[in-house]
Image 1 (cartoon, one colour):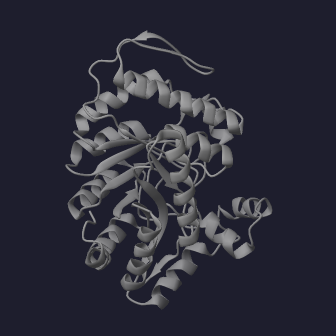
Image 2: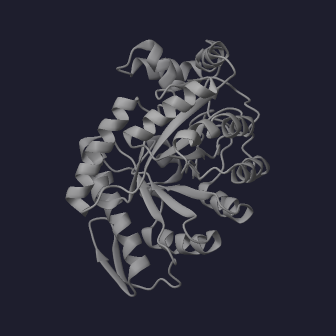
Image 3: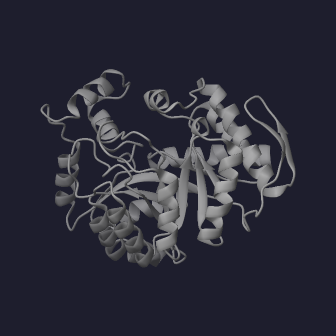
Length: 348
């Protein structure tokens, strides 16, 4: 099990809380990045969002690719996993950009998180392509075909439904090709990702849900690519406090939706369109990516025990969200890392 975290490109993670003390500015991202590097965190996921999906579309958010280069330049060991959405990029250009960023990073410090599609309104405002659900995975597979082809061959030729490449030259090539993560939970998504991705990233879930997905996806990838996935990452919002009661009070604080808050109307819309019960919907809505479903809330001992259950289920990379991140990363490293290492000494 490795510990990682989400880079807060949108000024925090909480939809119900306004100012989390995590400004969407480079100064804050640099502070968190260098701290995490020093504390021994393994990976940071840098989301690609042109609009802010946590604080509202009028709120500030930072751009993923320029941010990723900057994070790599100020850290020494931290791996940066940058999200990329085919609807906004040419794969030939991303192959070139990734080769240069890999040179900045050094071996095994840069990875990609391929996101098939997200948020039609953002695509409309920024001119991105927004294909139908199953077609997104066809596009994603072709996108990865072009990336891997350009990293491997010169000149490179490709003819697909979405992309045509005519004798492209990419030089220099990355010394180590970036690992490609992807996530998707539909039947079409799972089957496609098992064929083109190296590793898989899940939304938050229960231990039983994680175990089922790991088993299913490894069976698919072995069938399609001859080997299981290299890594399984999972999003999780973490609350660690000295007592369980303190942790539960913090959980109540971040999930309580105030009718006078800016997020209330969005929550009501979310609940109206959700097939989940109201209480679970509050959790789903509060932090996104189903980050509260793993239930990593409690004392250090309770959270460590739960993390080890996810490790046993096959999760290898925990992608933490917490607030305020600079304080909570220190708390988790000091109080949870040692407890997990007692059982899993290889933890980085």
